[in-house]
Image (cartoon, rainbow, N blue to C red; front, side, top):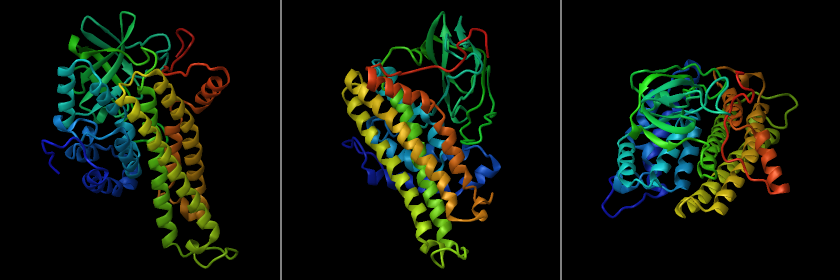
Length: 401
């Protein structure tokens, strides 16, 4: 559908007409990709063809002008098709959001138009070993970037990489071309789930950096920010999509099944009230997760439409996404475990790969560990403590890896 001069946005129905066929095409190969561990280069190209990365870009710059809620609605649907993809694109969305609120209008427009033409942004923020509790070991000095990053989610699919580095004792964000000389990327992520997110190691060896590639203060600098709730909500959208795909896959399997047990309550599994109860739990989990994600996305719309600086709104959204993190993780992990109760040993067949739903949900849910989030919520409720808006992972003991 072509944008007209008077158009400022697209409806949900119009967006579904554009993206649903692509999502269905992506979903069709999900199990085989899991078996082959084939990275998602083709699928990312399909998303680029329909300008999926430009959902939040204004229509006047070549995007769809989607609201935050519309974006997250589609991220849940994409996660149901392939849960690795929304996670791989997680930092891309926050980069676009930063451009929408940037003070430098000319630079912002340049990047937004680039995104509308297909540019995707990955990240290289987290470091192995000591990490960045004190400062980043990755540094930029004399126009050269050096260091090693891990969990570089999505960077192998990206055109540019957002790098967190130390410059003379201050944290900065640097945007580098993914194909620049001195950059080496490895697909060495060895987690048991979310295997195709390309969350491996990125090495920077004397990569040339110009002043205009340094975007300003890095992650964790500046106090309250919309970005932590936004980025956390992407992970919850992934979980919501996993729950939906687990429901769909399990339902399809049960409908076709004729084997049952001598002591079952019905001749066919789909007519067995105990099996129906499990499907009901899966449906409830998918609904709960999706509803919470879209509700908080609506809050982000209000926050960002108001300029993204209102401290009360920032605290409310951060608090809500923290609470939702527990509700969604608990519900989806329970459901993706319970799905195996609908059948016997045959449901564990490698050809089905239904275990990938639990493995993916378990893996995405350990980002920003829930035990720390719950403690922060409790301290906030009991003592009025401020919520932790950003944090770094690494050793608190100097020199330890």
